Amino acid sequence: MEYRLLGRTGLKVSELCFGTQTFGWVTEEDTAHSMLDRFVERGGNFFDTADSYNDGQSEEILGSWLKHQDRSDYVIGTKVFFETGGGPNEKGLSRKHIMDSVYQSLRRLNTDYIDLYQMHCWDRLTPFEETLRTLHDLISSGKVRYIGASNFTPSQLQKAIGTSKINGWEGFKNLQMEYSLLVRSPEWELLTLCRNEGIGVTCWSPLAGGWLTGKYQREGEAPEDSRVGRGDRWDDQPEQRASERTWDIIDVLNELSEETGKSQAQVSLNWLMHQDGVTAPVFGARTMEQLEDNLGAVDFELDDEQLDRLNEVSSIGTPSPYSFVNRYTRENPRSDS
Image (cartoon, rainbow, N blue to C red; front, side):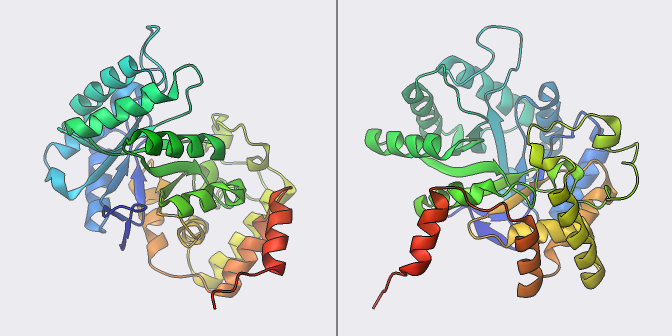
């Protein structure tokens, strides 16, 4: 596995990030530890979790494994925002909740510091200066090494960048966004903003909750032991549900799988890894078999023609003003001479 710099930092992370959201939910501790060992054997060093995943069990299982490792070998990312208890201050990005949560995360993870601490969502109730100053203080104290965000809009991210610069505080080094063949709207603005500002990009749900793994086909029912089959697929994006565009993408994935000898999941992850500005997809796995399949995404490269086919079939176009700006840019290329 190759390594990439996280944005405009000197931090080297593996080109795949192991997301541990299933730990403590459908993946027991022994299986989780075996999968973590296997990921490391393949060269992985980058792990993602959150304080709210499965009532903290995801962090605890990752921490029970981390306790027996050389801590300095790994990049551990966790997040804060969502509810972690029943109290009025056990949610959000207030100074109190962040400080309470970070110490609980450190305890569960069996570590003295967190490499990447991210705001899990925008908090419309807390003054942003309060949140960013608290994160800056955590870096100053040594409890956190880098900060970032997840699920921010372009305007929210730009506000964070500007507020940090004006006050001389540590700025975001990573944005974790939903991005996949089914969700390409980050290309309108977020990816460009991250590239321009030197912010790393990690992508959650890179396989769209299983839609890009080959388990769902145009003909036939969804397997009973699947998110769609069980009816537990959390999805507020209509374009991720069964639609003609989705089936067209799956058809092309089937074709490329036959051409390359790789699974649909491997093709999907490989496409994402080659998108400009992407640092690493954050993949999840319930079983060792799923883990091995995902790890196979780093063993090959799609050629330009194959990438073009995926880009074309998954395109969602560009609404105004992006369509106008893109057309003007094409018609008026900048000369560096």
